[in-house]
Length: 99
Image (cartoon, rainbow, N blue to C red):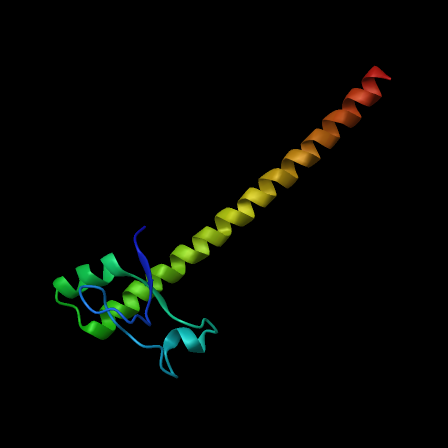
C-alpha cells in the first residue's frame, strides 16, 4: 500500500519526523512505536489537513494494513489445514471403496 515508516525517525526532509512520546495513541493500544504510511500523510498534508489529523489518519491506515496482513497469513494456514482435511477424507473414501 505504500512505504511504512516508524514515526521515530532521525532523518529530516519530506519524510515526517515524529517522536513516540508517552501518551501517543499507539502506545496506549500496546503498540510500541507508531507506524504510518508516508504517502498518505503527505497527500493529506498537501490537501490541507492539520498535521495531527494527517498523522492520525496515516497511522490508522497502517494499522488496518497490518491487520489485513495478519488475516491473509491466518487464511493461508486455514487453506493448508483444509487441504490436509480434504486429503484425509479422500484417502478414507478411497480406502473404504477400494478395500
